[in-house]
Image (cartoon, rainbow, N blue to C red; front, side, top):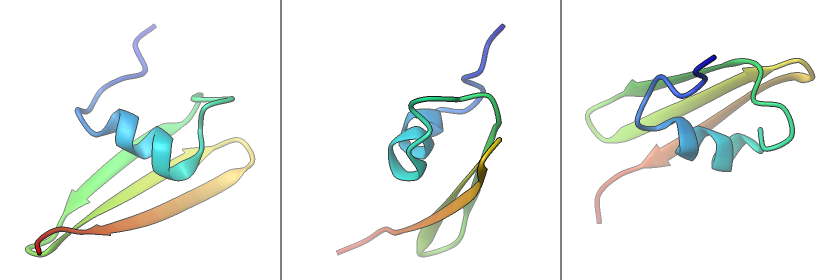
Length: 54
């Protein structure tokens, strides 16, 4: 079973704290200026926005 389906999976795990149970999905959406990382697991969800640029 492969849970890593996106290069940003680790980032999602870091940001959303899914170390204990990476049993959900990880979505990464790109904006022009930011990256939104969304992790969903049993105990709920997490959305983390990362603004790129200087």
